[in-house]
Length: 179
Image (cartoon, rainbow, N blue to C red; front, top):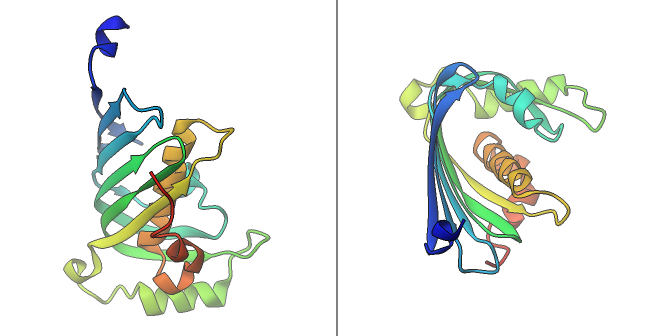
């Protein structure tokens, strides 16, 4: 409307339950004067079962979450009509993953090895939590902004959950892209 157009930035704050779990809080900012259509997203997710993320984000069939509990996560995305960048901080416990091959079959031995080496649950909760990930997701021209948000969050989740050595393509793109 004309009233919105008078503002330089439109803000929106959303708070809701997520899969009947406690909270999802999101703050959106949309600067209106730029032709690059920039936006900022700052989200907080409360406690939830991490396995439920498998059906939501379909981790591109490279891995799935076998078990784990999210204590809290903070997601920050800065994006525009070309690229989304940001970071994610997750505090979780009891994480175990399944690595998958091209046919979406679980790699049993490699999954077990990755869980043993990188997600050893003998650690106490404080040393296990606080994982950080990098968000990097180029927008697909024929897809909506919402698709870009989901892709950006998936990128951050993979980066936070998977060890750096298992994500060489994501790591190569950390510094790439222009705003």
